[in-house]
Image 1 (cartoon, each protein chain N blue to C red):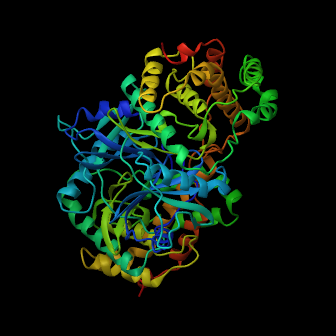
Image 2: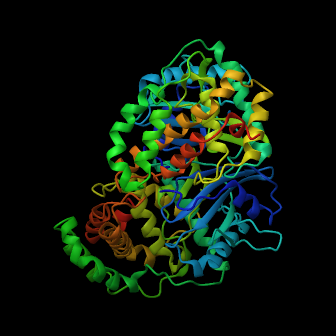
Length: 319
Length: 319
Protein backbone atom coordinates (compact mmCIF):
# COMPACT_ATOMS: atom_id res chain seq x y z
CA UNK A 1 0.00 0.00 0.00
CA UNK A 2 2.36 2.63 -1.22
CA UNK A 3 3.83 4.44 -4.17
CA UNK A 4 7.09 2.64 -4.86
CA UNK A 5 8.19 4.75 -7.81
CA UNK A 6 8.03 8.54 -7.72
CA UNK A 7 6.89 10.02 -11.02
CA UNK A 8 7.77 13.69 -11.41
CA UNK A 9 5.55 16.16 -13.24
CA UNK A 10 8.27 16.29 -15.89
CA UNK A 11 8.32 12.49 -16.40
CA UNK A 12 4.53 12.49 -16.58
CA UNK A 13 4.54 15.20 -19.23
CA UNK A 14 6.93 13.06 -21.28
CA UNK A 15 4.61 10.07 -21.06
CA UNK A 16 1.51 12.12 -21.91
CA UNK A 17 3.18 13.51 -25.03
CA UNK A 18 2.57 10.12 -26.65
CA UNK A 19 -1.18 10.25 -25.99
CA UNK A 20 -4.11 12.38 -27.10
CA UNK A 21 -5.03 13.10 -23.50
CA UNK A 22 -3.98 16.74 -23.14
CA UNK A 23 -1.90 17.99 -20.24
CA UNK A 24 -2.08 16.96 -16.59
CA UNK A 25 -4.47 19.04 -14.47
CA UNK A 26 -3.85 17.00 -11.33
CA UNK A 27 -1.63 14.07 -10.42
CA UNK A 28 -1.57 12.33 -7.07
CA UNK A 29 0.00 9.10 -5.94
CA UNK A 30 -2.68 6.86 -4.49
CA UNK A 31 -2.16 4.32 -1.75
CA UNK A 32 -3.78 1.30 -3.40
CA UNK A 33 -2.64 -2.18 -4.16
CA UNK A 34 0.45 -3.88 -2.83
CA UNK A 35 2.15 -4.63 -6.10
CA UNK A 36 2.04 -1.51 -8.22
CA UNK A 37 2.57 2.23 -7.98
CA UNK A 38 -0.67 4.00 -8.83
CA UNK A 39 -1.41 7.63 -9.59
CA UNK A 40 -4.73 9.36 -10.04
CA UNK A 41 -4.33 11.54 -13.13
CA UNK A 42 -6.68 14.22 -14.39
CA UNK A 43 -6.27 15.79 -17.81
CA UNK A 44 -8.53 17.96 -19.93
CA UNK A 45 -9.84 14.70 -21.44
CA UNK A 46 -10.89 13.02 -18.22
CA UNK A 47 -9.60 11.08 -15.27
CA UNK A 48 -7.30 8.09 -15.38
CA UNK A 49 -5.20 5.79 -13.25
CA UNK A 50 -1.51 5.60 -14.17
CA UNK A 51 -0.07 2.29 -13.02
CA UNK A 52 3.63 1.42 -12.89
CA UNK A 53 4.10 -2.31 -12.57
CA UNK A 54 6.67 -3.19 -9.95
CA UNK A 55 8.58 -6.46 -9.82
CA UNK A 56 5.83 -8.41 -8.03
CA UNK A 57 3.61 -8.44 -11.10
CA UNK A 58 4.32 -10.92 -13.90
CA UNK A 59 5.62 -8.50 -16.57
CA UNK A 60 5.40 -11.09 -19.35
CA UNK A 61 1.65 -11.35 -18.78
CA UNK A 62 0.96 -7.60 -18.89
CA UNK A 63 -0.15 -7.59 -22.55
CA UNK A 64 -2.56 -10.43 -21.66
CA UNK A 65 -3.98 -8.54 -18.64
CA UNK A 66 -4.47 -5.38 -20.71
CA UNK A 67 -6.08 -7.29 -23.58
CA UNK A 68 -8.39 -9.15 -21.18
CA UNK A 69 -9.62 -5.99 -19.47
CA UNK A 70 -10.10 -4.34 -22.86
CA UNK A 71 -12.20 -7.39 -23.85
CA UNK A 72 -14.36 -7.01 -20.74
CA UNK A 73 -14.76 -3.26 -21.30
CA UNK A 74 -15.76 -3.95 -24.93
CA UNK A 75 -18.36 -6.41 -23.59
CA UNK A 76 -19.95 -3.61 -21.59
CA UNK A 77 -18.74 -4.76 -18.19
CA UNK A 78 -17.76 -2.13 -15.58
CA UNK A 79 -14.06 -2.87 -16.09
CA UNK A 80 -11.81 0.20 -16.53
CA UNK A 81 -10.43 0.30 -20.05
CA UNK A 82 -6.70 0.60 -20.80
CA UNK A 83 -6.03 3.73 -22.88
CA UNK A 84 -4.05 3.38 -26.10
CA UNK A 85 -1.45 5.90 -27.16
CA UNK A 86 -1.27 7.41 -30.66
CA UNK A 87 0.49 4.25 -31.87
CA UNK A 88 -2.33 2.09 -30.52
CA UNK A 89 -0.26 0.75 -27.61
CA UNK A 90 -1.61 0.43 -24.09
CA UNK A 91 1.61 -0.88 -22.54
CA UNK A 92 4.32 1.74 -21.97
CA UNK A 93 7.68 2.02 -20.26
CA UNK A 94 8.16 4.77 -17.66
CA UNK A 95 11.21 5.17 -15.43
CA UNK A 96 12.34 1.70 -16.47
CA UNK A 97 9.07 0.07 -15.48
CA UNK A 98 6.15 -1.22 -17.53
CA UNK A 99 3.28 1.22 -17.19
CA UNK A 100 -0.25 1.79 -18.45
CA UNK A 101 -2.90 4.49 -18.30
CA UNK A 102 -6.34 3.08 -17.42
CA UNK A 103 -9.69 4.86 -17.45
CA UNK A 104 -10.89 6.04 -14.05
CA UNK A 105 -14.23 4.82 -12.72
CA UNK A 106 -16.15 6.27 -9.79
CA UNK A 107 -17.14 4.21 -6.79
CA UNK A 108 -15.88 3.22 -3.37
CA UNK A 109 -14.94 -0.15 -1.93
CA UNK A 110 -16.98 -1.32 1.02
CA UNK A 111 -15.27 -3.01 3.96
CA UNK A 112 -18.32 -4.74 5.42
CA UNK A 113 -20.66 -5.52 2.54
CA UNK A 114 -24.41 -5.73 2.97
CA UNK A 115 -26.38 -8.59 1.36
CA UNK A 116 -27.56 -6.19 -1.36
CA UNK A 117 -23.93 -5.34 -2.13
CA UNK A 118 -22.92 -9.01 -2.12
CA UNK A 119 -25.76 -9.76 -4.54
CA UNK A 120 -24.58 -6.99 -6.86
CA UNK A 121 -21.03 -8.35 -6.69
CA UNK A 122 -22.27 -11.86 -7.46
CA UNK A 123 -24.21 -10.56 -10.45
CA UNK A 124 -21.15 -8.69 -11.74
CA UNK A 125 -19.03 -11.81 -11.29
CA UNK A 126 -21.60 -13.82 -13.26
CA UNK A 127 -21.52 -11.26 -16.10
CA UNK A 128 -17.73 -11.53 -16.08
CA UNK A 129 -17.98 -15.32 -16.27
CA UNK A 130 -20.50 -15.07 -19.09
CA UNK A 131 -18.36 -12.65 -21.12
CA UNK A 132 -14.94 -14.22 -20.67
CA UNK A 133 -15.28 -17.19 -23.06
CA UNK A 134 -15.20 -14.84 -26.07
CA UNK A 135 -11.68 -13.76 -25.19
CA UNK A 136 -10.10 -16.99 -26.40
CA UNK A 137 -6.55 -16.54 -25.08
CA UNK A 138 -5.66 -18.73 -22.14
CA UNK A 139 -3.18 -18.08 -19.32
CA UNK A 140 -2.16 -20.61 -16.72
CA UNK A 141 -2.99 -19.78 -13.11
CA UNK A 142 0.42 -19.60 -11.40
CA UNK A 143 -1.34 -19.82 -8.04
CA UNK A 144 -3.74 -22.60 -9.06
CA UNK A 145 -4.24 -26.09 -7.67
CA UNK A 146 -1.27 -27.80 -9.39
CA UNK A 147 1.05 -25.33 -7.62
CA UNK A 148 -0.23 -25.71 -4.05
CA UNK A 149 2.00 -28.63 -2.96
CA UNK A 150 5.14 -26.71 -3.98
CA UNK A 151 3.84 -23.49 -2.41
CA UNK A 152 3.15 -25.39 0.82
CA UNK A 153 6.60 -26.95 0.82
CA UNK A 154 8.15 -23.46 0.83
CA UNK A 155 6.30 -22.27 3.93
CA UNK A 156 5.19 -25.29 6.01
CA UNK A 157 8.33 -25.25 8.11
CA UNK A 158 7.80 -21.70 9.37
CA UNK A 159 4.00 -21.95 9.64
CA UNK A 160 3.95 -23.37 13.17
CA UNK A 161 5.63 -20.19 14.43
CA UNK A 162 2.61 -18.21 13.20
CA UNK A 163 0.04 -20.52 14.78
CA UNK A 164 0.45 -24.07 16.13
CA UNK A 165 -2.65 -25.18 14.18
CA UNK A 166 -1.55 -23.72 10.86
CA UNK A 167 0.62 -26.61 9.54
CA UNK A 168 -2.12 -29.18 10.16
CA UNK A 169 -4.70 -27.00 8.39
CA UNK A 170 -2.42 -26.58 5.38
CA UNK A 171 -1.84 -30.35 5.27
CA UNK A 172 -5.58 -30.98 5.48
CA UNK A 173 -6.16 -28.50 2.66
CA UNK A 174 -3.57 -30.23 0.47
CA UNK A 175 -5.17 -33.64 1.10
CA UNK A 176 -8.66 -32.32 0.36
CA UNK A 177 -7.64 -30.72 -2.94
CA UNK A 178 -5.36 -33.47 -4.29
CA UNK A 179 -8.19 -34.90 -6.41
CA UNK A 180 -9.38 -31.74 -8.13
CA UNK A 181 -12.68 -31.63 -10.01
CA UNK A 182 -12.26 -32.71 -13.62
CA UNK A 183 -14.57 -31.67 -16.41
CA UNK A 184 -15.96 -28.48 -14.90
CA UNK A 185 -16.08 -25.43 -17.19
CA UNK A 186 -13.00 -23.23 -17.34
CA UNK A 187 -12.65 -19.70 -18.65
CA UNK A 188 -10.78 -16.46 -17.91
CA UNK A 189 -11.48 -15.65 -14.26
CA UNK A 190 -10.51 -12.91 -11.79
CA UNK A 191 -9.41 -15.16 -8.85
CA UNK A 192 -8.99 -12.14 -6.51
CA UNK A 193 -12.40 -10.45 -6.35
CA UNK A 194 -12.20 -9.20 -2.77
CA UNK A 195 -14.47 -6.31 -1.77
CA UNK A 196 -11.57 -3.89 -2.25
CA UNK A 197 -11.43 -4.85 -5.93
CA UNK A 198 -15.08 -3.94 -6.43
CA UNK A 199 -16.06 -0.28 -6.68
CA UNK A 200 -19.66 0.51 -5.81
CA UNK A 201 -22.03 3.43 -5.54
CA UNK A 202 -24.67 2.38 -3.06
CA UNK A 203 -25.66 -1.13 -4.16
CA UNK A 204 -24.50 -0.70 -7.77
CA UNK A 205 -21.19 -2.11 -9.00
CA UNK A 206 -19.34 0.61 -10.91
CA UNK A 207 -15.94 -1.03 -11.27
CA UNK A 208 -14.25 -4.43 -11.20
CA UNK A 209 -10.53 -3.78 -10.87
CA UNK A 210 -7.11 -5.32 -10.30
CA UNK A 211 -7.08 -8.23 -12.76
CA UNK A 212 -3.39 -8.97 -12.12
CA UNK A 213 -4.17 -12.45 -10.78
CA UNK A 214 -6.59 -13.21 -13.63
CA UNK A 215 -5.99 -16.54 -15.37
CA UNK A 216 -7.75 -19.39 -17.10
CA UNK A 217 -9.25 -21.64 -14.43
CA UNK A 218 -12.51 -23.19 -13.21
CA UNK A 219 -15.45 -20.79 -13.19
CA UNK A 220 -16.70 -22.37 -9.96
CA UNK A 221 -13.26 -21.92 -8.36
CA UNK A 222 -13.52 -18.17 -9.03
CA UNK A 223 -16.96 -18.28 -7.43
CA UNK A 224 -15.43 -20.04 -4.40
CA UNK A 225 -12.68 -17.40 -4.14
CA UNK A 226 -15.31 -14.66 -4.18
CA UNK A 227 -17.38 -16.50 -1.57
CA UNK A 228 -14.30 -16.82 0.67
CA UNK A 229 -13.55 -13.11 0.21
CA UNK A 230 -17.08 -11.76 0.82
CA UNK A 231 -18.98 -14.07 3.14
CA UNK A 232 -16.85 -14.34 6.30
CA UNK A 233 -15.90 -12.01 9.10
CA UNK A 234 -12.46 -10.52 8.46
CA UNK A 235 -10.80 -12.93 10.90
CA UNK A 236 -12.49 -15.92 9.24
CA UNK A 237 -14.26 -17.06 12.40
CA UNK A 238 -17.84 -16.41 11.25
CA UNK A 239 -19.57 -17.35 8.01
CA UNK A 240 -22.54 -15.16 7.11
CA UNK A 241 -25.31 -17.18 5.38
CA UNK A 242 -27.18 -14.01 4.38
CA UNK A 243 -24.17 -12.75 2.43
CA UNK A 244 -23.58 -16.20 0.92
CA UNK A 245 -27.21 -16.48 -0.15
CA UNK A 246 -27.14 -12.99 -1.70
CA UNK A 247 -23.87 -13.68 -3.56
CA UNK A 248 -25.37 -16.89 -4.96
CA UNK A 249 -28.60 -15.16 -5.99
CA UNK A 250 -26.65 -12.47 -7.81
CA UNK A 251 -24.50 -14.97 -9.69
CA UNK A 252 -27.51 -17.20 -10.48
CA UNK A 253 -29.20 -14.26 -12.17
CA UNK A 254 -26.38 -13.68 -14.65
CA UNK A 255 -24.45 -16.94 -15.15
CA UNK A 256 -25.13 -19.34 -12.31
CA UNK A 257 -23.55 -22.65 -11.41
CA UNK A 258 -24.43 -26.12 -12.73
CA UNK A 259 -25.28 -29.01 -10.41
CA UNK A 260 -21.76 -30.40 -10.87
CA UNK A 261 -20.24 -27.02 -10.02
CA UNK A 262 -22.42 -26.68 -6.94
CA UNK A 263 -21.47 -30.16 -5.77
CA UNK A 264 -17.80 -29.23 -5.98
CA UNK A 265 -18.13 -25.95 -4.04
CA UNK A 266 -16.91 -27.18 -0.62
CA UNK A 267 -13.76 -28.64 -2.14
CA UNK A 268 -13.25 -25.56 -4.32
CA UNK A 269 -13.69 -23.43 -1.19
CA UNK A 270 -10.98 -25.44 0.57
CA UNK A 271 -8.77 -24.69 -2.42
CA UNK A 272 -9.60 -20.99 -2.44
CA UNK A 273 -8.91 -20.68 1.28
CA UNK A 274 -5.73 -22.76 0.92
CA UNK A 275 -4.42 -20.50 -1.87
CA UNK A 276 -4.71 -17.37 0.29
CA UNK A 277 -3.48 -19.17 3.40
CA UNK A 278 -0.36 -20.24 1.51
CA UNK A 279 0.45 -16.87 -0.04
CA UNK A 280 -0.21 -15.04 3.21
CA UNK A 281 1.93 -17.51 5.15
CA UNK A 282 4.71 -17.08 2.63
CA UNK A 283 4.42 -13.29 2.75
CA UNK A 284 4.26 -13.32 6.57
CA UNK A 285 7.50 -15.28 6.77
CA UNK A 286 9.29 -13.36 4.03
CA UNK A 287 8.15 -9.73 4.27
CA UNK A 288 11.09 -7.69 5.56
CA UNK A 289 10.45 -5.54 8.61
CA UNK A 290 11.05 -2.36 6.62
CA UNK A 291 8.54 -3.20 3.87
CA UNK A 292 5.89 -0.67 2.95
CA UNK A 293 3.27 -3.40 3.10
CA UNK A 294 1.12 -4.45 6.03
CA UNK A 295 1.24 -8.23 6.44
CA UNK A 296 -2.10 -10.03 6.44
CA UNK A 297 -2.89 -12.72 8.99
CA UNK A 298 -2.73 -16.19 7.36
CA UNK A 299 -5.07 -17.54 10.05
CA UNK A 300 -7.94 -15.46 8.66
CA UNK A 301 -7.98 -17.84 5.68
CA UNK A 302 -6.86 -20.97 7.54
CA UNK A 303 -10.07 -20.61 9.60
CA UNK A 304 -12.11 -20.37 6.39
CA UNK A 305 -10.29 -23.49 5.20
CA UNK A 306 -11.42 -25.34 8.32
CA UNK A 307 -14.99 -24.17 7.64
CA UNK A 308 -14.98 -25.44 4.03
CA UNK A 309 -13.57 -28.81 5.15
CA UNK A 310 -16.86 -29.39 7.02
CA UNK A 311 -19.20 -27.51 4.68
CA UNK A 312 -21.95 -28.82 2.40
CA UNK A 313 -22.77 -27.24 -0.98
CA UNK A 314 -25.92 -25.72 0.53
CA UNK A 315 -23.89 -24.10 3.30
CA UNK A 316 -21.63 -22.42 0.71
CA UNK A 317 -24.75 -21.20 -1.08
CA UNK A 318 -26.15 -19.82 2.19
CA UNK A 319 -29.18 -22.11 2.14
CA UNK B 1 4.44 9.30 2.36
CA UNK B 2 1.69 6.93 3.26
CA UNK B 3 -1.81 6.51 4.57
CA UNK B 4 -1.38 5.80 8.25
CA UNK B 5 -5.05 5.43 9.12
CA UNK B 6 -7.40 3.35 6.98
CA UNK B 7 -10.81 4.99 6.62
CA UNK B 8 -13.53 2.57 5.52
CA UNK B 9 -16.38 3.56 3.24
CA UNK B 10 -18.64 3.13 6.26
CA UNK B 11 -16.58 5.48 8.47
CA UNK B 12 -16.50 8.02 5.65
CA UNK B 13 -20.28 7.88 5.27
CA UNK B 14 -20.60 8.59 9.00
CA UNK B 15 -18.37 11.65 8.68
CA UNK B 16 -20.17 12.95 5.58
CA UNK B 17 -23.54 12.70 7.32
CA UNK B 18 -22.55 15.85 9.24
CA UNK B 19 -21.92 17.86 6.06
CA UNK B 20 -23.97 19.12 3.15
CA UNK B 21 -21.64 17.44 0.68
CA UNK B 22 -23.78 14.53 -0.53
CA UNK B 23 -22.47 10.97 -0.71
CA UNK B 24 -19.03 9.76 -1.74
CA UNK B 25 -18.61 9.03 -5.44
CA UNK B 26 -14.94 8.14 -5.11
CA UNK B 27 -12.49 7.88 -2.23
CA UNK B 28 -8.80 7.08 -2.57
CA UNK B 29 -5.96 7.29 -0.11
CA UNK B 30 -3.24 9.52 -1.53
CA UNK B 31 0.44 9.17 -0.87
CA UNK B 32 1.22 12.75 0.09
CA UNK B 33 2.80 14.37 3.09
CA UNK B 34 4.77 12.65 5.81
CA UNK B 35 2.65 13.71 8.73
CA UNK B 36 -0.97 13.11 7.84
CA UNK B 37 -3.22 10.53 6.21
CA UNK B 38 -4.83 12.08 3.15
CA UNK B 39 -7.70 10.92 0.97
CA UNK B 40 -8.98 12.32 -2.28
CA UNK B 41 -12.75 12.44 -1.95
CA UNK B 42 -15.32 13.12 -4.65
CA UNK B 43 -18.96 13.76 -3.84
CA UNK B 44 -21.85 15.09 -5.88
CA UNK B 45 -20.82 18.56 -4.60
CA UNK B 46 -17.22 18.48 -5.78
CA UNK B 47 -13.80 17.23 -4.90
CA UNK B 48 -12.09 17.47 -1.55
CA UNK B 49 -9.10 16.29 0.45
CA UNK B 50 -9.89 14.51 3.70
CA UNK B 51 -6.96 14.83 6.09
CA UNK B 52 -6.51 12.87 9.31
CA UNK B 53 -3.90 14.50 11.50
CA UNK B 54 -1.47 11.97 12.92
CA UNK B 55 0.62 12.50 16.01
CA UNK B 56 3.40 14.44 14.25
CA UNK B 57 1.21 17.48 13.74
CA UNK B 58 0.61 19.88 16.65
CA UNK B 59 -3.04 19.08 17.39
CA UNK B 60 -3.48 22.12 19.65
CA UNK B 61 -2.66 24.38 16.72
CA UNK B 62 -5.13 22.79 14.26
CA UNK B 63 -7.86 25.40 14.81
CA UNK B 64 -5.21 28.07 14.12
CA UNK B 65 -4.04 26.37 10.88
CA UNK B 66 -7.63 25.99 9.66
CA UNK B 67 -8.50 29.58 10.54
CA UNK B 68 -5.34 30.86 8.82
CA UNK B 69 -6.00 29.00 5.57
CA UNK B 70 -9.62 30.15 5.66
CA UNK B 71 -8.30 33.72 6.03
CA UNK B 72 -6.06 33.28 2.98
CA UNK B 73 -8.87 31.73 0.94
CA UNK B 74 -11.14 34.64 1.92
CA UNK B 75 -8.40 37.00 0.72
CA UNK B 76 -8.58 35.41 -2.72
CA UNK B 77 -5.32 33.50 -2.50
CA UNK B 78 -5.08 30.06 -4.12
CA UNK B 79 -5.20 28.35 -0.72
CA UNK B 80 -7.63 25.41 -0.43
CA UNK B 81 -10.47 26.30 1.91
CA UNK B 82 -11.44 24.11 4.89
CA UNK B 83 -15.07 23.02 4.56
CA UNK B 84 -17.42 23.62 7.47
CA UNK B 85 -20.02 21.07 8.56
CA UNK B 86 -23.68 21.94 9.26
CA UNK B 87 -22.65 23.21 12.71
CA UNK B 88 -20.05 25.52 11.16
CA UNK B 89 -17.10 23.42 12.33
CA UNK B 90 -14.12 22.64 10.11
CA UNK B 91 -12.28 20.49 12.65
CA UNK B 92 -13.70 16.99 13.15
CA UNK B 93 -12.76 13.77 14.91
CA UNK B 94 -12.57 10.57 12.85
CA UNK B 95 -11.29 7.22 14.12
CA UNK B 96 -9.91 8.99 17.18
CA UNK B 97 -7.92 11.48 15.17
CA UNK B 98 -8.50 15.15 14.38
CA UNK B 99 -9.64 15.46 10.79
CA UNK B 100 -10.76 18.06 8.28
CA UNK B 101 -12.25 18.18 4.80
CA UNK B 102 -10.47 20.72 2.58
CA UNK B 103 -11.46 21.90 -0.88
CA UNK B 104 -9.54 20.24 -3.72
CA UNK B 105 -7.55 22.39 -6.12
CA UNK B 106 -6.15 21.28 -9.47
CA UNK B 107 -2.49 21.52 -10.31
CA UNK B 108 0.69 19.49 -10.14
CA UNK B 109 3.91 20.04 -8.21
CA UNK B 110 7.03 20.48 -10.30
CA UNK B 111 10.25 18.79 -9.25
CA UNK B 112 12.68 20.96 -11.22
CA UNK B 113 11.11 24.41 -11.51
CA UNK B 114 11.75 26.70 -14.43
CA UNK B 115 12.48 30.41 -13.83
CA UNK B 116 8.92 31.25 -14.94
CA UNK B 117 7.58 28.85 -12.32
CA UNK B 118 9.91 30.24 -9.64
CA UNK B 119 8.68 33.74 -10.50
CA UNK B 120 5.07 32.63 -10.14
CA UNK B 121 5.89 31.03 -6.78
CA UNK B 122 7.63 34.21 -5.62
CA UNK B 123 4.60 36.28 -6.61
CA UNK B 124 2.26 33.91 -4.75
CA UNK B 125 4.50 34.09 -1.69
CA UNK B 126 4.42 37.88 -1.85
CA UNK B 127 0.61 37.87 -2.03
CA UNK B 128 0.60 35.57 1.01
CA UNK B 129 2.90 37.96 2.86
CA UNK B 130 0.72 40.90 1.87
CA UNK B 131 -2.50 39.22 3.02
CA UNK B 132 -1.32 37.65 6.28
CA UNK B 133 -1.23 40.78 8.47
CA UNK B 134 -5.04 40.99 8.46
CA UNK B 135 -5.26 37.65 10.26
CA UNK B 136 -4.18 39.07 13.59
CA UNK B 137 -3.66 35.86 15.57
CA UNK B 138 -0.04 34.97 16.25
CA UNK B 139 1.54 31.54 16.72
CA UNK B 140 5.09 30.95 17.84
CA UNK B 141 7.36 29.16 15.38
CA UNK B 142 8.36 25.98 17.22
CA UNK B 143 11.18 25.49 14.72
CA UNK B 144 12.32 29.13 14.70
CA UNK B 145 15.65 30.69 15.62
CA UNK B 146 15.27 30.62 19.43
CA UNK B 147 14.91 26.83 19.25
CA UNK B 148 17.95 26.02 17.09
CA UNK B 149 20.54 25.65 19.88
CA UNK B 150 18.37 23.08 21.68
CA UNK B 151 17.56 21.30 18.39
CA UNK B 152 21.29 21.15 17.63
CA UNK B 153 22.11 19.79 21.07
CA UNK B 154 19.78 16.85 20.43
CA UNK B 155 21.48 15.75 17.20
CA UNK B 156 25.06 17.08 17.13
CA UNK B 157 26.49 13.94 18.68
CA UNK B 158 25.18 11.64 15.96
CA UNK B 159 25.77 14.09 13.09
CA UNK B 160 29.37 13.07 12.42
CA UNK B 161 28.20 9.56 11.57
CA UNK B 162 26.13 11.03 8.72
CA UNK B 163 28.97 13.17 7.35
CA UNK B 164 32.26 14.20 8.97
CA UNK B 165 31.65 17.83 7.95
CA UNK B 166 28.11 18.02 9.30
CA UNK B 167 28.87 18.91 12.97
CA UNK B 168 31.13 21.82 11.98
CA UNK B 169 28.52 23.17 9.56
CA UNK B 170 25.83 23.02 12.24
CA UNK B 171 28.16 24.82 14.69
CA UNK B 172 28.91 27.49 12.08
CA UNK B 173 25.19 27.91 11.44
CA UNK B 174 24.50 28.37 15.15
CA UNK B 175 27.25 30.98 15.45
CA UNK B 176 26.02 32.90 12.40
CA UNK B 177 22.42 33.02 13.63
CA UNK B 178 23.04 33.79 17.30
CA UNK B 179 22.49 37.51 16.71
CA UNK B 180 19.20 37.40 14.82
CA UNK B 181 17.88 40.45 12.96
CA UNK B 182 15.77 42.65 15.23
CA UNK B 183 13.12 45.02 14.02
CA UNK B 184 12.31 43.33 10.71
CA UNK B 185 8.59 42.87 9.90
CA UNK B 186 6.90 39.74 11.15
CA UNK B 187 3.60 38.20 10.09
CA UNK B 188 2.00 34.81 9.55
CA UNK B 189 4.29 32.91 7.22
CA UNK B 190 4.37 29.47 5.59
CA UNK B 191 8.00 28.50 6.45
CA UNK B 192 7.82 25.33 4.31
CA UNK B 193 7.04 26.48 0.77
CA UNK B 194 8.95 23.80 -1.10
CA UNK B 195 7.97 23.10 -4.72
CA UNK B 196 5.89 20.13 -3.58
CA UNK B 197 3.71 22.49 -1.56
CA UNK B 198 2.93 24.60 -4.64
CA UNK B 199 0.42 23.29 -7.19
CA UNK B 200 0.79 24.70 -10.69
CA UNK B 201 -0.77 24.45 -14.12
CA UNK B 202 1.95 25.45 -16.55
CA UNK B 203 3.41 28.64 -15.05
CA UNK B 204 0.33 29.52 -12.99
CA UNK B 205 0.12 28.83 -9.28
CA UNK B 206 -3.21 27.09 -8.54
CA UNK B 207 -2.58 26.04 -4.97
CA UNK B 208 -0.44 26.81 -1.91
CA UNK B 209 -0.82 23.87 0.45
CA UNK B 210 0.42 22.23 3.65
CA UNK B 211 0.41 25.12 6.12
CA UNK B 212 1.17 22.83 9.09
CA UNK B 213 4.48 24.57 9.79
CA UNK B 214 2.94 28.05 9.43
CA UNK B 215 3.73 30.44 12.27
CA UNK B 216 4.35 34.06 13.07
CA UNK B 217 7.89 34.93 12.09
CA UNK B 218 10.01 37.26 9.95
CA UNK B 219 8.64 37.82 6.44
CA UNK B 220 12.18 37.81 5.08
CA UNK B 221 12.93 34.52 6.85
CA UNK B 222 10.00 32.93 4.97
CA UNK B 223 11.49 34.38 1.78
CA UNK B 224 14.85 32.81 2.70
CA UNK B 225 13.20 29.42 3.32
CA UNK B 226 11.56 29.60 -0.08
CA UNK B 227 14.83 30.61 -1.72
CA UNK B 228 16.58 27.65 -0.07
CA UNK B 229 13.81 25.33 -1.24
CA UNK B 230 13.60 26.51 -4.86
CA UNK B 231 16.97 27.84 -6.02
CA UNK B 232 19.43 24.97 -5.47
CA UNK B 233 20.00 21.60 -7.03
CA UNK B 234 18.38 18.86 -4.94
CA UNK B 235 21.71 17.90 -3.36
CA UNK B 236 22.45 21.52 -2.46
CA UNK B 237 25.69 21.65 -4.42
CA UNK B 238 24.59 24.19 -7.04
CA UNK B 239 22.84 27.52 -6.63
CA UNK B 240 20.88 28.66 -9.70
CA UNK B 241 21.00 32.49 -10.09
CA UNK B 242 18.30 32.43 -12.78
CA UNK B 243 15.84 30.78 -10.39
CA UNK B 244 16.88 33.14 -7.57
CA UNK B 245 16.42 36.19 -9.78
CA UNK B 246 13.02 34.97 -10.95
CA UNK B 247 11.85 34.23 -7.39
CA UNK B 248 12.94 37.73 -6.31
CA UNK B 249 11.23 39.37 -9.28
CA UNK B 250 7.99 37.55 -8.50
CA UNK B 251 8.04 38.55 -4.84
CA UNK B 252 9.04 42.13 -5.66
CA UNK B 253 5.94 42.44 -7.84
CA UNK B 254 3.54 41.59 -5.03
CA UNK B 255 5.15 42.44 -1.69
CA UNK B 256 8.89 42.75 -2.04
CA UNK B 257 11.62 43.14 0.54
CA UNK B 258 12.89 46.34 2.18
CA UNK B 259 16.56 47.32 2.15
CA UNK B 260 16.92 46.07 5.73
CA UNK B 261 15.31 42.75 4.83
CA UNK B 262 17.56 42.35 1.79
CA UNK B 263 20.65 43.11 3.87
CA UNK B 264 19.69 40.32 6.26
CA UNK B 265 19.08 37.69 3.57
CA UNK B 266 22.40 35.81 3.82
CA UNK B 267 22.02 35.40 7.57
CA UNK B 268 18.35 34.46 7.20
CA UNK B 269 19.38 31.94 4.56
CA UNK B 270 21.88 30.40 6.97
CA UNK B 271 19.01 30.11 9.43
CA UNK B 272 16.65 28.58 6.88
CA UNK B 273 19.25 26.03 5.82
CA UNK B 274 20.15 25.33 9.45
CA UNK B 275 16.49 24.67 10.37
CA UNK B 276 16.14 21.98 7.68
CA UNK B 277 19.62 20.59 8.35
CA UNK B 278 18.68 20.16 12.01
CA UNK B 279 15.27 18.55 11.48
CA UNK B 280 16.62 16.25 8.77
CA UNK B 281 19.57 15.26 10.94
CA UNK B 282 17.23 14.54 13.82
CA UNK B 283 14.91 12.53 11.58
CA UNK B 284 17.84 10.67 10.00
CA UNK B 285 19.09 9.57 13.40
CA UNK B 286 15.66 8.75 14.83
CA UNK B 287 13.56 7.32 11.99
CA UNK B 288 13.09 3.61 12.67
CA UNK B 289 14.06 1.25 9.86
CA UNK B 290 10.46 0.11 9.45
CA UNK B 291 9.03 3.61 9.05
CA UNK B 292 6.85 4.37 6.06
CA UNK B 293 8.86 7.53 5.44
CA UNK B 294 11.87 8.01 3.21
CA UNK B 295 14.61 9.81 5.10
CA UNK B 296 15.96 12.98 3.49
CA UNK B 297 19.67 13.67 3.30
CA UNK B 298 20.65 16.37 5.85
CA UNK B 299 23.71 17.25 3.73
CA UNK B 300 21.46 18.64 0.99
CA UNK B 301 20.72 21.54 3.35
CA UNK B 302 24.09 21.61 5.10
CA UNK B 303 25.61 22.41 1.68
CA UNK B 304 23.12 25.24 1.24
CA UNK B 305 24.12 26.46 4.71
CA UNK B 306 27.75 26.60 3.59
CA UNK B 307 26.68 28.61 0.53
CA UNK B 308 24.74 31.17 2.58
CA UNK B 309 27.68 31.58 4.98
CA UNK B 310 29.65 33.04 2.05
CA UNK B 311 26.79 34.73 0.21
CA UNK B 312 26.04 38.41 -0.32
CA UNK B 313 22.49 39.80 -0.49
CA UNK B 314 22.84 40.21 -4.25
CA UNK B 315 23.81 36.55 -4.61
CA UNK B 316 20.63 35.50 -2.77
CA UNK B 317 18.64 37.75 -5.09
CA UNK B 318 20.34 36.19 -8.13
CA UNK B 319 21.93 39.44 -9.23
